[in-house]
Image 1 (cartoon, rainbow, N blue to C red):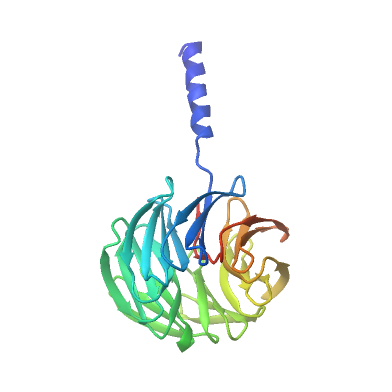
Image 2: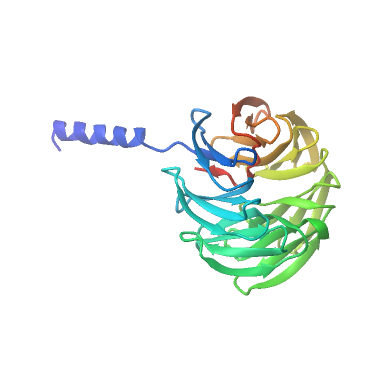
Length: 316
């Protein structure tokens, strides 16, 4: 290859690298009926996307580059293009859609309808309905096994987590946990699930092989959502009323630290590559950034009104 050709190839590679998209956070703002798009390289909002009334739940489909949002008051499910930040589709989603999780491999989105005790499935591209499952009372958080076969539903008013086989369309277990389970998160390897019990101020670890609780630990007041650090096997738990995050060491089975964040933290997500934890603060309209290794807050990003981000809101 000639020197000039090599130079052109090198320049093209550099240009392509320079165009690589930054990882993004899509934060639902219930008070302003929109979604703040945060560039995680710059730690600033780069776009605001209008959605339905009272958006709270959020889930990303990295394979398709889509973001899904539930809006409880208007009863809507919205899909957003993760590159253009434009609304792609909108669908009716029941009387009180809240919890949401997406299955990137099967092209499905699952939405919990708080008021009708139902989880509905939708096509990821068109948002066309693809079936539904009866749940317990007040289904809130959702989580999915890595293979998409098992859907976990936190039934808040039944104090249990329901396990649905999405292939067979049947409930295979109802696992008793603490009082008023809300957020539920699955480990990346699918061996454990982690549940935040809002009214009993504790988290429950579920062994997915035996479909039973394996550990319960106290945290702060009104725990809401959980992020799992698989590298260090730690949990980060938002405590709404304490305005902090509990850090749980699952190996030592104890709370390591409380990290002060914004007012009334709700949604939380972990970026394992960047070793950062992001916390949505409902009452202070912001996202707090935490170093996952030093366990120190690194700063706060201003967002819209009433940031909730309940679900997986990071798009790599």
